[in-house]
Length: 137
Image (tube, rainbow, N blue to C red):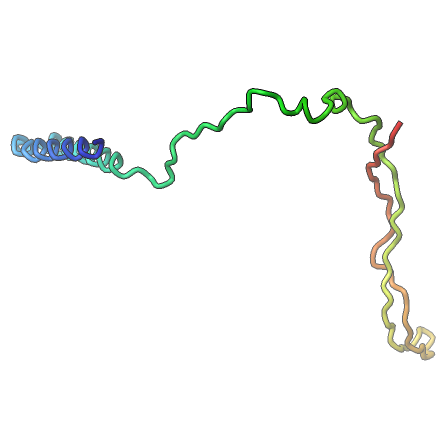
């Protein structure tokens, strides 16, 4: 029914607006306004016929049941209390990170030959790290 009303309105508007420019008598402003009015009306009719596909309308979700099943399952007083304890910040030492790499043979400053061997190279220094720990009273 809605679509039929929109189509009939569009046909009537098209017929009435198609005869209006004949009376404009080359007046540019009136012709421009008639064209803009026709465009706005045509756009409104087109959008009324073609609703976006994402339109779903308003959906109401059902409310909770009339009875309270929670009171049958558990003791609500127990869950109303806060847990006993607190957060405490502790510092821990993170060890430095080393990497074993091959140090190739080379001459020392005094000119003597130093044989190659595996040596320990520090990649990252050690540091203190703060962590949160839950402590019971």
